[in-house]
Image (cartoon, rainbow, N blue to C red; front, side, top):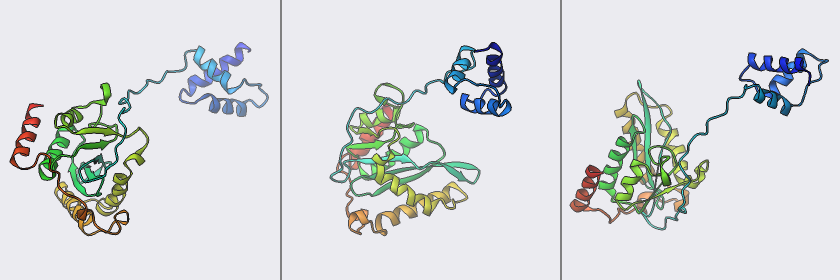
Length: 255
């Protein structure tokens, strides 16, 4: 290849450092109709050998889960947890934390949180554990604070679950359908409580609480034979009463 041609390609890349070989080749062809240009792959090679390519940093992700996803055959065999995105409430951002029972589709909690940090999630879960008892397993995605980049994806939150005897299941990255029942609930939640949102956190939480009651006790579910989740859900026998509260409180304080 003529040195002048390579110099022209290098100059074009320096002028447009964010343009790829395909785009720059098309621009040069249009600017110089009679010029014989190399292939797109040669353009890329020229960029590389002239130090015009910045290698992308690989994002560290939570390691894939090695445990298979379970089937929920009875209440509290499996809870599903997630955040339903975030949106503005007044001058703040709201991150709804949602928890459902996979078997009955019972919406255990929908809590308006100001962020996704572990402290707020643990406080919300502690309230649910004291109200409904403990599940056998909790299923989540691979995001923070549910998982981390540590070995086995263990996070501070999932380590707390482990200390309480709760198994943590993580769906595969890019496969929200593995938490499909929970995701379907999110569609209804967004339509009925976020469009539009309330003007304060307190008012938004009231919307969530009202939705939770309607979802559990008044809205027939086709998958349940047009019956209600409240008809199928039963409180867990694990960690009930004062003994359960003491165990949960000591686990929270000691971890």
